[in-house]
Image (cartoon, rainbow, N blue to C red; front, side):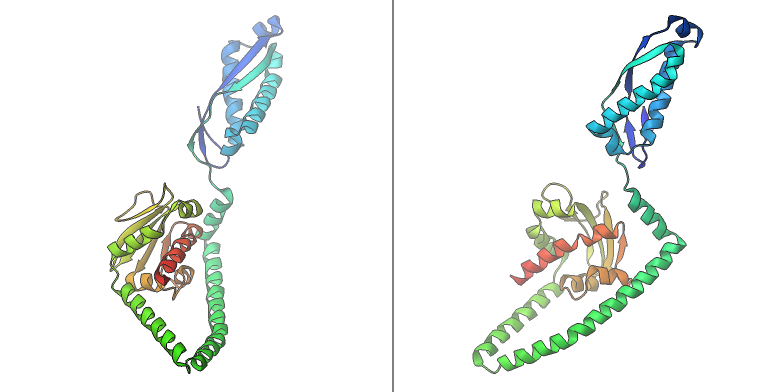
Length: 289
């Protein structure tokens, strides 16, 4: 039979109950249709016990053993009055039809969708934006000092030549990103995807980019892949425009900053979307080679 577990999973299982008549008189007089009554009682008790457990508790060997013991004890207490002793209980193989949910995450998502959650998001968003501004202000003096140091070093002809080459490389990189089309982007992303990245991320991302094209990145199956079009099995969808895509690729803005200021829309788990930064880091390493 199929039973919904405590963590909203769905499992299919059965049980074999072995019984022995200890009191023949009670077995005949205390209950009608003893075998049918024992079967109905076993089904009801098994359903009640499984409903209080999570999917992992039902599928693990220790959890199955404890479930058998509890089922045998509870059935024994009820059937003793019928003159019947439950000698043994065996569970069938458990088939998981639907995996259990993360209850803490489900509760958190429910709170976020409520009016209280909206207030919390607004509060966190304001605090995060203020923090980003403060960090940028702190970096300004260090950046200006670095520019001053570079200016002093540029007095030598050798350093002037090196700086010139770096600037030329920077202009070439910026120009290549501006002229990048979706096919070249997917080709570049494919070069940095491997099994190690798939093991670290574990999600499928759908990217809907206005003025550029739709594509998806599979970092969940096999060695990973990225293709044009729409994925029906995507875990997270990101909606943005072409300009924002290039700014993220150049690391001028982080995905979290774009999400907080509303320019990036995330459909699905924000926590999962953050894992996409592992791919963008590899892509930037490829550009810097």
